[in-house]
Length: 236
Image (tube, rainbow, N blue to C red; front, side, top):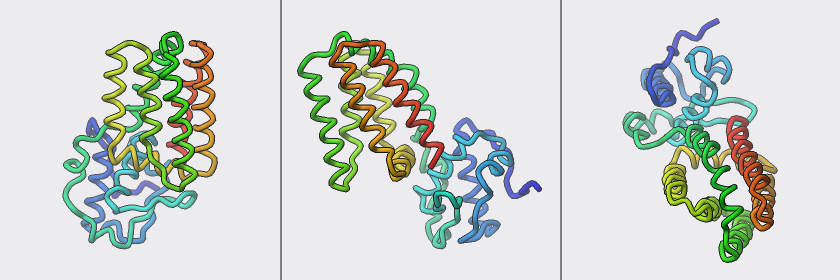
């Protein structure tokens, strides 16, 4: 049976309309604190959107402290949601980009930049990458995760492509990925046991391909790495 409280969405930033709907339903008391939202598959159908947009919307609602997503149980309206209703989502997230669109852009561009880097990277850049791999693991072991070493790792590879346009594009993308919506999604994904270790192993494999001046392997490894991140964001 259809849940008539939700309507199909139309905005370019689809996830924002979903967020607006949930905010209004909470404000109108049509959804009450503690209530579980419909299951993802059902809610996607009611809204007429894909699961990626819904995942982004739920992440935004978590950033706003209106919803809590409990792995394996679903999304619940927080008990203090009414107290946290500040402003309209379209204003709060107007400068945010879709995390999945950013990843899509990276999947198109970054593997090719990595193949170029495998031909042109310097010994000094290899050393920088080795140090960043160690820094990523040290951060994780200390219990304090920082995304900065990972971002620097990818940007050094882009710079090593010796293509200024590719490098500047990826700098822009990384800057957009430093915002709240992406950080919320990626942070929650890294809470899943084994994910950090998987990405760490992929970074090591990528570094080895660059050391060996192997463009094809470097390109394949980067594509696999980005594809795995995207897949994992859907499985939180």
